[in-house]
Image (cartoon, rainbow, N blue to C red):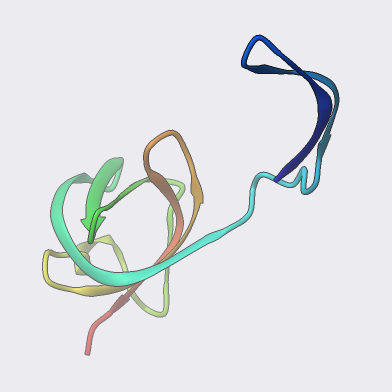
Length: 98
């Protein structure tokens, strides 16, 4: 969220002051859902949860006694990640094996 002060000029806003309300841009994203369209290897993989694209790599941590081999289409997962350009980079994944 930003706050902008300025003057209108030819249908545009000429800003004289721009304040960013929350400069922290690395807020975590939490997504829970069912894996679909899984591709890749532990080195670089991706899947979808609904319409969200999730990508991970060797730096992605698997938690709760889960591992990459447990990741499969139809499995329910909990993902904590960061928003990137058009996808969520998975920092941590927990595969629910129930």
